Image 1 (tube, rainbow, N blue to C red):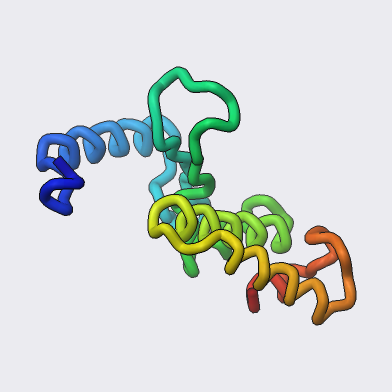
Image 2: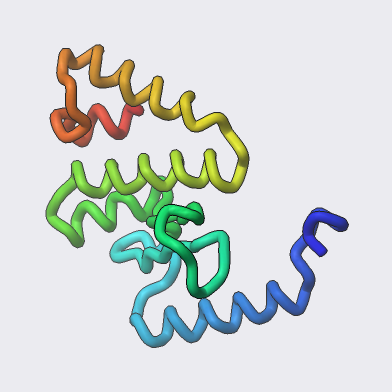
Length: 130
């Protein structure tokens, strides 16, 4: 239906909204909540799949506002910004069809600018800029 109309069916939107509301109630958090966000992952496939066969988008619920809440809640600003970077990368590649190499090149450029070779050597400020 989505491929034909460009929109999810209303019944699907309603069902997803109902399940999200139930999850938020159960977890005591809301998707995108600024101080302690509920984060979810979405897999683009069947309930049972073979490892490595389906793309997953992690950290849905992070935003410019909620990344600060995750940093505070986790006590690790770098972790929060790396999680947000990964959401943007996965969403761009998986959902929007952005060439994944563009994200990898930007990450490599950030590491080169800092004269480091591994992602974990980038500080929170580097990831925020990225």
